Length: 189
Image (cartoon, rainbow, N blue to C red):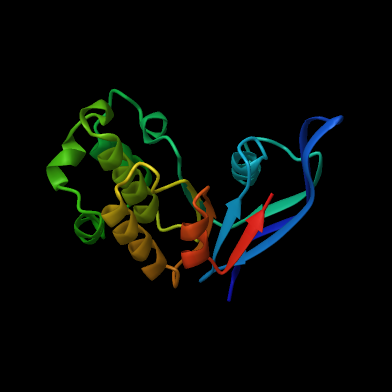
């Protein structure tokens, strides 16, 4: 299987005196789902920032395939004055839109609205919709189901796992039961 993410000897700290993590190695292949868990402030979201290239490590290297991300806070991941559909069309093909709408239990009409007109759960599912329509080889998931109720959370995770033949997934979660249920490997930092 194709490697979609390779972290080698990664070290990061906001100062050289205060290192968040050191010697972090992680390899992720298409078809795998790995979870990162740890205390708040341990650097889980920082790892995603390093993968995205928004921050630079003190040491080590990051190699990532074509990726998309589902952010923990869906309100900050959409521009407030454009409809969701326009924002999705800007970055993704709408080829499989109907399939994902049904799986995510979203009505197409919701996509004609502005982000603040949706509930947190609806907006989070729209964020997952956008990420999946981008057809990534690597999908970064930062607490993607925390705003969803238990039934929809299960449906969404099952849908994501059905797409592991097309992508590799890296999940940040505090939910150890979820990580144990869906992960090929759990990395604690």
